[in-house]
Structures are given as structure tokens and as C-alpha cells.
Image (cartoon, rainbow, N blue to C red; front, side):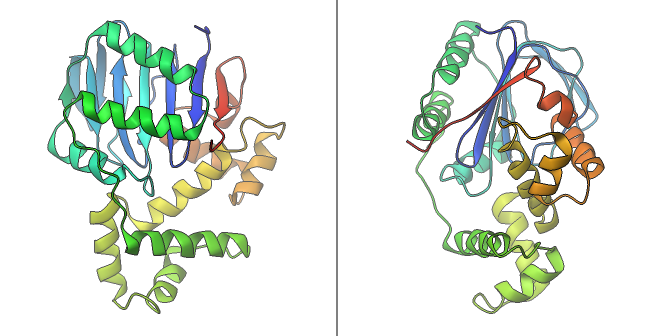
Length: 258
């Protein structure tokens, strides 16, 4: 296995097979499953210390920090993924998990040999199954309509802002801004503002395996400047963009659809 950490990007999901990454606080905008590969993990989760964790599932936005760096697998499933709902139910109903180091090592090997995004989706379903979670693919027509609206605004170069999205969305899905905000928070565990910021960062991530520098990536992804990208990337990943893009630190691989 490579001495570098690996970032594997799929459709609305990604996996980090971490060797030795910084231990700053970060909060992922999706459901995250952390699995220790060798020694147990020691984490600070929302200000509470949790030593001796073999695996843990975290709801969107929960702040966590490794108290000491250790090899692990970090799986993040984003809103819009077909398995997001079962992952979110799982995160809301449990936290600490158990897994054998041998199984974790096998999972890490599997991730590094995935050939396409479909295989990653199948791997996620097996992960749910291993921990006794049902994994029916569940779609939300209302959420899909919101995602299509945001994609359409992005294609036309209209930078989506929370204040401008809900009035347009209400034309096809009547409701007040407050009602839509409550629905989205229940549906994905994130506010619209958080989700829009994440979409920008995800767009930046998709450019990491190319030749662009951090400033160019920031502008292409919709950030005002590289400083905003720097702050967001550090808050979400505990990594600066220059670190995330450093091939000596992280090997980035975008999986083809099929």
C-alpha cells in the first residue's frame, strides 16, 4: 500500500484512506464513517473525548478531531447519494461501532482497487450491510428537484445564494422559506447555506487531480478568492488546499462513472 494517503472520489461520496494526516478539527457536510485500520482511534467529538474507538458514524456537521494521528478510513456520503437516507438514519441512531482490524485492512485494500463509481456505491452498500443496516436506495423527488435547480443555476453561471434559491424553488414546491429550511435540515442534516458552501468545495475537490493551482481552482469552483477556499477546506478536512493538492501527501483519484 502506498505510503501516501488516498482520496477516492465517487458520485456524491468520497473515501480517504489516511496514513498520517493533520489532526485539526474538521466537520464533514455529509454522513461520515471513520474506521481504524491498526490501532484504535482517539477522537474529540464535539468537545467530548472518545479513546479506544474502532469505528464510529457521525451525522453531518459534527466536529471531530483526532487526538493522535493514526491510519484510518474516512467514508463520507453526501446529500444526493442514493444511499444517503439509510446512512443518515444510521448516524442518528448510533455512534460507536466495532470492527476487526483485519476487516478494516481488507476494506482499505478494496477501496484502492475500485475501478469506477458504481463499484464504490456497491462497496458502500456492503459497508452498511456489515453493520446490520438496511440499504435500500431511497430517492426524494423534492430533494432531487432542489439538486436539479442548483445544477441549473450553476450551469448558467448564476451563483446560488440561500436567499435567492428558496423563492425560485417555491415556484414549483409552494412553501415559506422557513418551511423549506426546516424540511432541508431534516432531509439532509444541513442548512441550505452549509450545503451550498459544500457544493463549492466539492467542485474544488473534483479539480484536485488536474494541473490547476489553488487560486485557479478556487475561482473555478465559485469561491471569491483562495483565502475563502483555504478556510473552508481547513474547516472541513483539517487540510489546507495546498496540502490536499500535494501529491506527496494525498493521492487523488476521480472514479469514472462506469
